[in-house]
Image (tube, rainbow, N blue to C red; front, side):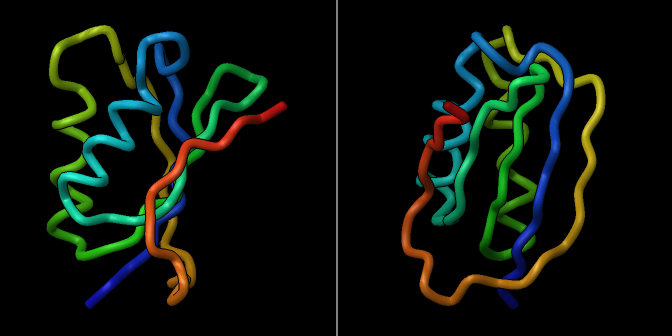
Length: 92
């Protein structure tokens, strides 16, 4: 069934296209959610969909270099039944 995961991702994840790659990967895998840069240099992301598709998301984000993840924290959270897209949020 559908799950929703909250991620906090650390490493070289800002200024390297992480958010745009995440959006492209999510759309190609029929996932919903959002991604945003944090002021401490990390990225926060929520992803919703089938667990198998979510697991395929990170190889797509990492493809092509530049992004380098050094640490990632993940937890399951409640599904949002109304969410229909994957968006990029700003932290400003």
